Length: 478
Ligand SMILES: Cc1cc2nc3c(=O)[nH]c(=O)nc-3n(C[C@H](O)[C@H](O)[C@H](O)COP(=O)(O)OP(=O)(O)OC[C@H]3O[C@@H](n4cnc5c(N)ncnc54)[C@H](O)[C@@H]3O)c2cc1C
Ligand code: FES
Ligand code: FES
Image (tube, rainbow, N blue to C red; front, side, top):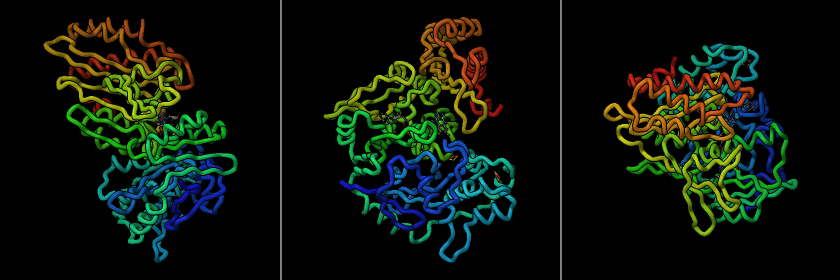
């Protein structure tokens, strides 16, 4: 068992001791003088604090991701390499192409957002191929208030492919060798426990019932930075390989609760492209690089985006208890109320099983938010529909933002299945939806009346898409 945190910053291996476990990476870096890392929002929304985080890969070297340093706590970097704008210079002192292109192309004015954009672009430069879609995706988590995005996008278009410097592979190997042991770190009255396997994590959960179960921290981090809560104990699941597995079978895909959105996307692109489209609208790239589907279900938010889609796909959550015990719960039964789930005090979310839809079924997801990128839903709906010989053979629908918890629209489904696929059926079912399934509330994301109108519109949209076989993506662009 190790009692310190080992990471690398800008190419140098370091050991951390005496730093409170809930200290954010942003605050820690800035206190050390890495002040290129800016604090804009302290909630993952603006990208000013973006750094590159490298996780050693099995075959050697690092898998690099851009992430927000403001909502990660320092011990979450154990075994990882962090690069800030200060660390981008090459050995000969020359600036990184992302820095040169941003400066020379007029991509920076007041400069507050610029290090964050540079880090997002430096991370993008590692990708051998990129197009405008990947460029926009890479910077969708970064806000600039003065320059305008055109020169930034042009800088991204002009980026050369940046290959890993020769000293990266030895650094990665060194980190792996130095961080094999599990972590139990205590400092300034706080404790950070990071077991290497599931049984140890379940034992720690029982031994520390008040511990925050930490995955990516994109929800929990805000409790620290916005609500100023100080966790006594953090139980981090990020070292447990079994939680990060993604397995595709002929029946569907199983995604480990600790797999990040970014890790899950290739499998979702293959099996459920429309779910992948929805996932690409969860936060920005810096959030998807660390946020997990397990965390999205675990926080049991009524406006979490994955739940409606998983309900419509008849997905199941697999829960693990000590002694290898497992149980599966349909996603719609996982939630029991506002931010409440069936998870028992000795359980952890282990995986999410998403079946392959029936050959003739179509799947539709709609996220309605104030803007396309980096925004939480006002309403999110998903439908799985199969029409055979003019009749509805299958209709399953999940909704978010319409009740205290994500819901399955059973009354709507009952009014659809077995009926002819006609405008009259859709109207009758819509009435049932409002009578039983959907009871939106008013909050700052939208009033109840607005949400009701949105829900009605989404049912109409489904009718048009299924009737006319319109690809969801084309309507997404409207
Ligand atoms: C800027 C920003 C934008 C966002 N945009 C969206 C969005 O568009 N749509 C959306 O749905 N969400 C969004 N979120 C919320 C968040 O990113 C997601 O909910 C994410 O999936 C949480 O995953 P995580 O791994 O970071 O969870 P964490 O913060 O680590 O944990 C979240 C909760 O789940 C619990 N938990 C995590 N893993 C397990 C497990 N294995 N077993 C039991 N409990 C567990 C934790 O204890 C905690 O209660 C956004 C957040 C930010 C900061
Ligand atoms: S400070 Fe805004 S995303 Fe971190
Ligand atoms: S240059 Fe001022 S916020 Fe972007």
